[in-house]
Amino acid sequence: MTLFLVKMRSLVLPMLSLISIANLSFAQDSELIEKVSDGLNLTKEDCLEAFILQKNIPNLASESIIVIPKISERNEDYFILDSYILIVNTQTGEIKSEFHEEKTWYSDALILESIEIDSSSYSLNNNKITFGIRVKYHTMSRPNPFELEELSLFIQNGRKIERILKKLQIHVFKGQTDAICAGEFEEQNKSIIISKNITNGYYDLKIINKITKSHTTKEDCESKIIEREKFVEYLKYENGEYKSSF
Image 1 (tube, rainbow, N blue to C red):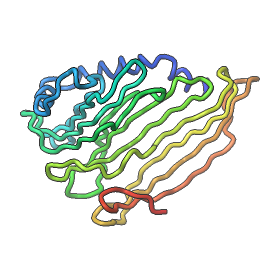
Image 2: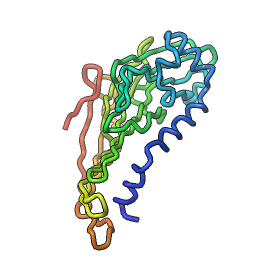
Image 3: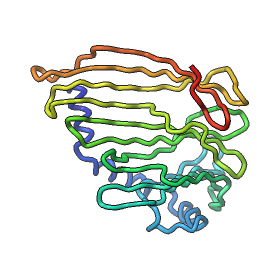
Image 4: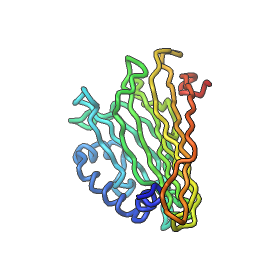
């Protein structure tokens, strides 16, 4: 199956993504989430329940990461979400640390597909808990398919959770097609390598961006790679966040 057809099949039924995310929400610790929501004076009606998340912190079972998206605006065509990102006591629901931002996530023509907690070992500072939030979007356009995945990194700093990397685009897929088969496409995938160098108490990040350009034709609908590129970028921690430093 061609790259184009695989990508297009993933966009056909967006409700499947919403259903699977909703099912995941039921797997969360509902009692814990209710305690935390009460502590924030949030009701079920205030939040988009399908995107509420809870995940135990690796090697620290007494604490959990919880994500609560509060509805800021909503109508038939779009919604905007405020974010509550929390570290809590897994047993009591006591909020240990908190990040709150208005209008963090949105869904309109660019559809919010999923929000995920990434508890990979981002050892950026040996003394602080670090984790990621991954957010995926896609469009429903057959002539102009588009996918996006963003990664933000957070650290626990006392009562606060601080965002130290904001919405790094780690995956982008875009194309222009005849809405049937023929088209031109570009896909970018970024990987993060933690450097041994330290700037202002945090390890530098090496970002490797691999770009693949391809096309399909009406004759065979088979994807053919026409160009590959690789770029390297370094991010250093300055004034509270990671910034580009080529």
